[in-house]
Amino acid sequence: EPMHPYTQALISAIPEPDPTIKKKRIKLKGEIPSPVNIPPGCRFWPRCPKAMPICRRKVPPLKEVEDGRRVACWLYYEP
Figure (cartoon, rainbow, N blue to C red):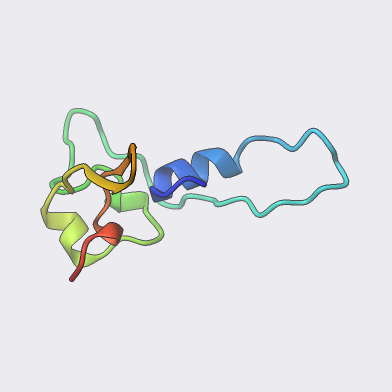
């Protein structure tokens, strides 16, 4: 199960081989930021459905959330 919202959206976009199986697709809104003018903070916050105020200000550090599993997302840090 993916933890980062961007990875969740990517996985949800994979087509299901069986057309009778319906799955929820995460549709990202907004514009893709320019690679020339990268926004401060987390690079995904402009399109992230779960963005919080801290996402706009600071890049999240990589955090080990399970043995051998890491995520760089403020959702997994204590407030």
